[in-house]
Length: 263
Image 1 (cartoon, rainbow, N blue to C red):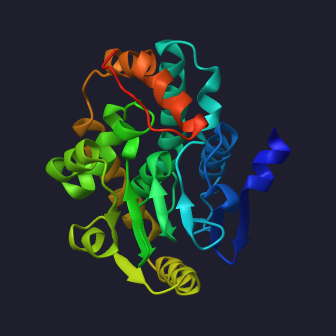
Image 2 (image 1 turned 30 degrees about the vertical axis):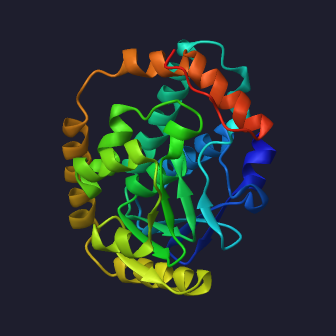
């Protein structure tokens, strides 16, 4: 499991920049549970001695940052409790990402959906290529739900109205709109240009006051935590334990359109 995670989520250090790469390009960099765990471990292990001054998170292949969680991994889910365990595992990873002591940059080449989209939202800066497609199509695919914390991560960037729009319409936000609404900070013309810009941003960050940036990160994290301070366990269990969730999973694996019943 660890060997697979290390092959599917790469980590290298260039100068004072750590680079995390989701490395499943044939699957649009769909994320495994082990990949989520490894991302959290990397963020938690960043030293505070100044040897690393920024972290870049990106996706291999030039077509996708990440297509969310690999849906085949949900086959073993039997009840709402499995969904609660999954969301708790995800939240542990997000806590480590957001508490990373250095600025994080999401360099997004193309598709960025589901759990990968929340990872991008949880980073401090987001830049993308012009073929960006960002969103959460779960209401027409899997019939699970986003946790309150994950909705808050997106809504803090886009506003509540646009976050709800993405969830209800399941449409994917494209590059120009993403820039206009503040979802991303810059657009680049190619994956190579994207990575060059991410490295340039990391180099700029390395010249700036670490404590000032860390304080800013922590203030935003505390604001987000307060914003998300609502109970959602009943809703998570309801969705993951539903017949619709099983139907969405079965339909996806069979490559057919799901027939949801509201049960």
